Length: 89
Image 1 (cartoon, rainbow, N blue to C red):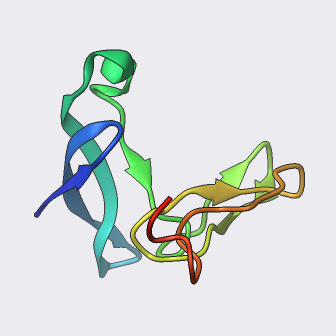
Image 2: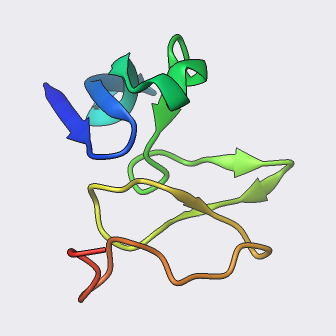
Image 3: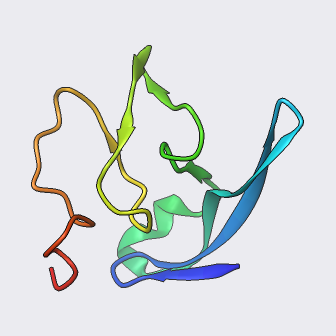
C-alpha cells in the first residue's frame, strides 16, 4: 500500500512479523520525497501504536490519529496533528 504525506512525499507501508504474528502496515518507508526530505530515503519508520517502540529505553506512545504515526516522549509537548480538529493543519 502507498500513502502520501503532503510535506514529505510518497511512502510504502509494510507488514511486520512479531513473534509469528503479522501486524499489517506497522512500518513505512519513503520511496519518493520532496527535495527538502531526501535524507528520509532508505530509512524505515514504525507506528508506535502497532508495535512497541523505544527511544533511549523510554517507551514512546503514538501521537493522536492512526495516520500520522509520530512518536511522542515525555519531553515532547503538543499540540500534535492527528487529534480531533487538526485535520486542516
